[in-house]
Amino acid sequence: MTLEQLTKQVSDLHAYLPKSNLVSWTSGNISGRLVNTDTMVIKPSGIMFEDLRPDNMCVVDIESLENRSQYKFSSDTATHAYIYKNMPEVGGIVHTHSNYATAWAAVGKEIPCFLTAMADEFGGPIPLGGFALIGGEEIGREVVRVLTGHKSPAIIMQNHGVFTIGKTPKDAVKAAVMCEDVARTAYLAVQLGKPLEISDEDIAKLHHRYTNVYGQ
Image (cartoon, rainbow, N blue to C red; front, side, top):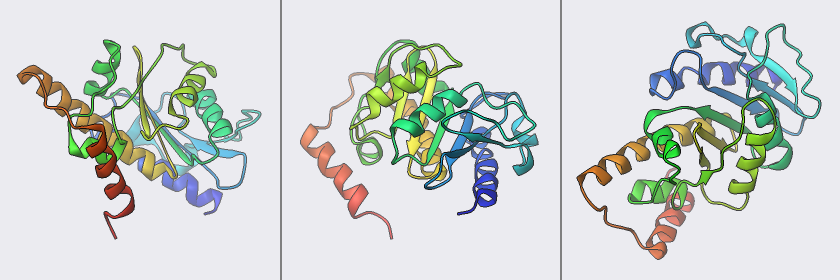
């Protein structure tokens, strides 16, 4: 994939965030790493989603944070860069403040694995990361600490919101959409009573089937 193709892909994928009710106003962002380089493409700061285009995406050096764009990059850029530097398998990152997942983060609770769909996609609970301030590498450090070696491609950050990772930006967007979906159902289940748990053994079997057998 060329830089031009990645820039268009990252720009286009942003439409899924408001469409899926994962963001409000200008919050949230998507980035993608150009394969085998230290270059990433990320959303500009404070621009409405309907105004995002390939020509206002920010092309940023992961090591130096040098910005090749005329637009200011997202305030989460240092976080994305830190994750890319420390998780070389990651090619895409998404950040949202989706309502139900962020509600779990606000009360400091991981999202329990009550659903087969959650076992499939996340391989267990969606973990909770500790509180970290916005603007530097602090959030990135916590994301890397918690998700390194973890099956889940998603983390909810205490008092903040959701970060998801994937081999590609599209994979990370899918994880963000699914994170909010299962967070909502888990919340509703807790309101109805005590949800029935799935055994660790069955969670592992479900996740293996989904990641190794399911699909074309």
